[in-house]
Length: 198
Image (cartoon, rainbow, N blue to C red; front, side):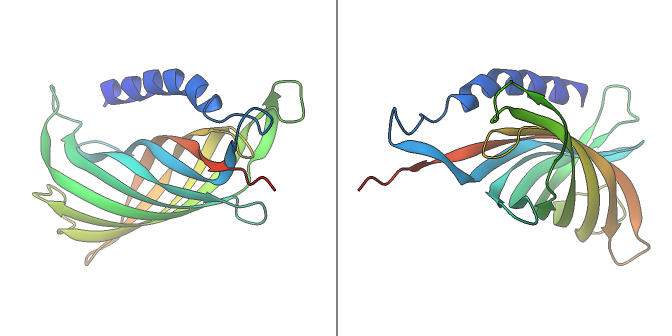
């Protein structure tokens, strides 16, 4: 799992300048950032023994009032035995997630101008449906989960957004609910939209 996180952090450090330069200013060209974004990341449950590690990609609709963003994402991953010496993978798991993220409570800002990059905390609520093949967990092949995930975030407004997310997730299945921790590294790349000229 450590290699997965290291790979994502390297990728984010490479992508951040590229995402910042993704669009031109209205004076230079015909595209500006829109309210929509593509979300991506790595998501893992926490604990001993078998855990879920997944890659995630989705669509994010950013809002100017109330809930800051609503997202729909898909995850594809596997079960990893964290207690094994060399690690062991088993099965495949797919999930679909509906999420809502609160506005960020800013604690600092990068850049001196008004449109500087915000740094702060937000909260994401998630409802997830899972389906799995060869699952080592006693959840069956289908289950749901509810998550409340505080995050340390970088990026505000229509700029690229990055977050370290960690919090509880509750697996709901035919038996007794099972609580796990969930950790994710996430990013959002705003989609460009074409400016209309009279």
